[in-house]
Amino acid sequence: MKRPRYGFSLAELLVVIATVAILLTIGYRGLVAYLEAQRLREAAENVKNVLFEARNRASLESQGYRLKVCGADRIGFVHESGGDPCIATVMQLPYGIQVEMKDGLCQNPKSVLRFTGRGLPIEARCFTLSYRSKQRKVAILATGKVVMP
Image (tube, rainbow, N blue to C red; front, side, top):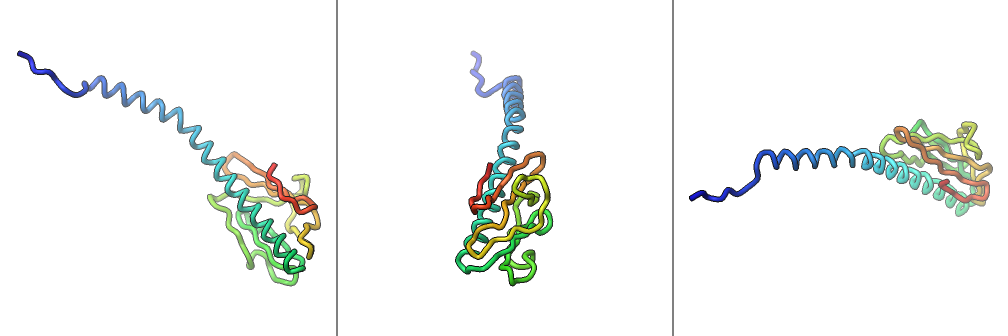
């Protein structure tokens, strides 16, 4: 009398492993794209928060403030009578994300954003965040509104 065999054959295991490998390969690119988009979204929120903080401090203290992009991945701000914004309050962007400040139309590079004592920017500015091949923009309008188009 034959005894029944329990378990899986080698062929069955190889088919399952090959199927799982194919599914992981298909899903990997989507996962990487999703993670890149999430990282850019997080960095854009950080830039938005720095703009809000600089605007609110200018308004509360009734002093002008300067905001500057320091290097490729840091943003600093200080009141008008203070020193270098890159030494004062500095926010480092995560994940090696690069930031560039341009004029309100996102065309010409600019170095400084100034806020009046009422918390309004003197001019509109656009911040372009870059991570690998993706980009995201954060803009502050002349009205003080921060938008992420």
